[in-house]
Length: 352
Image 1 (cartoon, helix red, strand yellow):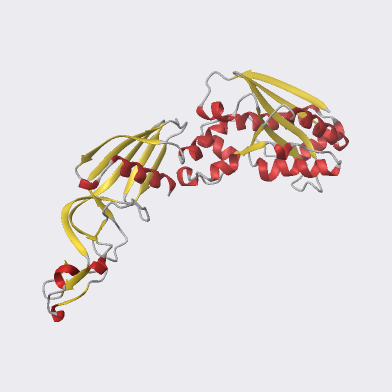
Image 2 (cartoon, helix red, strand yellow):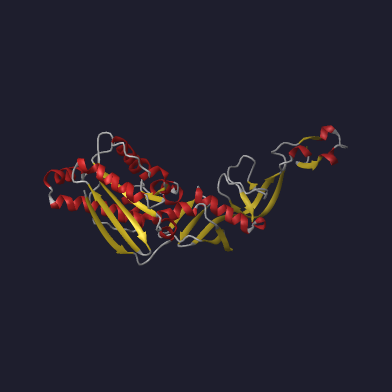
């Protein structure tokens, strides 16, 4: 077994590194000879630790299959000093692979006792924001503007490792070391992808809003600064997230719309006049002139300016307006706008 160490310093930290990568956390990534832990073995474990601004990347390299148990035992000794794990697709692959290989050697592993953050799973939870073609590590690196020197994937390096294992070819060794090093170092920087899933549950604060002809423009802020901006277009409006600011533009409608009263059973409908009246007033009227009101009957018209709402949003007890009872599109009157409603609309837009 060989142990290779590389150190470097980070000059600029970020929200994600400060929150997720501290002295009790370890990034890790494995390299193996196949996808099945029963038919393949682990030939390298790379991991990164942090102390202040200093990052240390360590690689445990098995020169052949007989040394696999050595790198597993060494990694177990390392895990004793850390409480949290960070990886990419690491709960379903790396962790499971390590558990299965340790079982082969009857080696107890503590890996499942650690608090584990899988950046792949976290990024897929933010699909509504990211909308990437896929959520592979290299795709996320490109989205975040990161560049890597390694041109291979893990599968392409299996024959390279096999050549190294048989011949100790130095060029082959450097290729597999570079790939794993770039994977581990890349994971540190793509930790910024965790900003996006965190944003969905973070505090959003109203700053201001203004009306601009047929648009309502809203500005809000969050504690999270995104590394790459987001722009989304919806039928009812658009939003842009830049650093820690959220800019929302909603469409306005000017004209007459209806709000439908929920307590329709408390009204009568007068056919001849096309209006509703409270039951208390209608009881004394001729029954031929009135009938129990239906949901469709219980509507009140209002001529004003309205804000288009996202489909499916629940804004609570605030009045909602429609063109007709069956209309799928709903609106809120500009007179009913409150800061909390604008925040609720924004949060809904981010999640859908």
